[in-house]
Image (cartoon, rainbow over the protein chains, first blue to last red):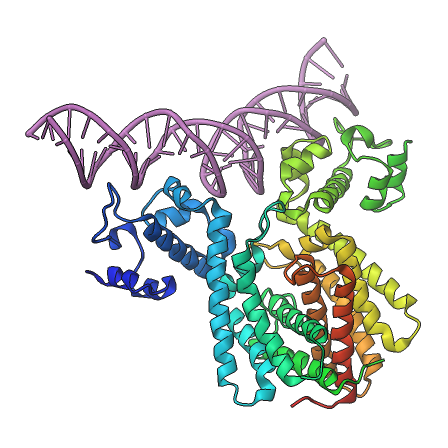
Amino acid sequence: MNSVQFAYSMHINSVQYLAILCVHRSHFRAVDDMARRSDHSRDEIRAMALAAAEVIIDEQGYATLSARKVASSIGYTVGTLYLVFRNLDDLVLQVNGRTLDALFARLTEALAHSHSERLGVTALGQGYLGFAMAHPHRWGAVFEHQLPTDVPTPDWYLAKVAQSFELVEAELTRLAPARSETEIAQAARALWSGVHGVCILGLTGRLGNVASDSLEALVESLISNYLAGFTSGTVFR
Amino acid sequence: MNSVQFAYSMHINSVQYLAILCVHRSHFRAVDDMARRSDHSRDEIRAMALAAAEVIIDEQGYATLSARKVASSIGYTVGTLYLVFRNLDDLVLQVNGRTLDALFARLTEALAHSHSERLGVTALGQGYLGFAMAHPHRWGAVFEHQLPTDVPTPDWYLAKVAQSFELVEAELTRLAPARSETEIAQAARALWSGVHGVCILGLTGRLGNVASDSLEALVESLISNYLAGFTSGTVFR
DNA sequence: GGACTGAATTGAACAACGTTCATTTACACC
DNA sequence: GGTGTAAATGAACGTTGTTCAATTCAGTCC
């Protein structure tokens, strides 16, 4: 059993085993399957394709992704991809799902490392910005990709979005326990949208040439000033 | 002289004269030009194409725009379009430039109608959201369109972005005259990014099903809480 | 060992895309 | 009417996502 087989059988995620070696048909033989002609099961092809797409997006951006590129980088042809994914949107949605999982992991980690309870929201904000800066293309793909208007976003995907969002709500509740659920929800949306806006405009260079540390300052400014108003209850009029 | 010739000679903008009648080769004859074969001068074709692209984006979204669509909707073929625009990016950039102008107009108007000086920033925020909601596709195109990485954004375009941004800075200066230029600039970026984030996430449906009036509430919350901190000078720690 | 079977895989085909440019068209002038 | 020339065309090229008849081959049976 070679290292990639090992990686696969351990259910190591795609980015991790990609670090081990290039995913390609020739480097990824199944061992004990009853496949007819195939080197790999559907699930294996699926995993390889997702990993390959992730690398392409990470290195060259979502805009350059194409079905033929993914197929050839795993040593198969386009046709095979369509046996495993309904279409390209399907594939991209799965890649983005993985990205949302990675984001969630980063956020929970940021929260764990923030010793002061009061700074939890700030840790989340900086964690979000940090993730976006560390993986700009993969993070960007989540927002650049658009499902056709007549295709609803699947529930499993919405759930992955929600899990990160709920972290913010939880921190805000801890911070302002007297506030109603509605007020917390609104504050979380306002604040999170705000942080997201800083990331979007900052990373796409639409704020002028802002250095990355000043993006951190913007997030800091947004959160601390907002919380000053939100926790004191005084309204600006 | 028919109504469209009139509209054109008055330099009425494309959206306005599109409201008068469909822009098409057959409806847009130049009168006193020395054109050889042409019905229209380069500038006229240019104006017609921009107007047509604007309508396509407005009605069907930026993703559906194509050179052939624009060409056929003005009664010419693709080739002609490339005599007038360097490429599609060029065309889209001009449409987006017009959108930024329209946004600026809306913002200055919002400012003029806000009688209380203190609420100027809020008026700008709501004006921005209002524009985005009124023209979601045209506004979206400004952010969905991406120039190739090796092509720098032209200066005239950056200037159009800046003109709206400076309104926010001016209002913040009026509101907190004691703050340094740097602090004002940072606050303007943080606040504007925040409002932008609410618009982006709200209009692309990524905040769940938020009603439009609650987007207004989010903008209100973001701005008033931020300003509470910013104008009082107290920092949340 | 050779024929058979059926799943796995292919790659040609389609329509639409941005872009180019040799060719055609129609006007102004002589 | 002939000729020069600018305007406009549309076929062509290399992409794209997507489909599906055709091919290939592992496993089974005789």
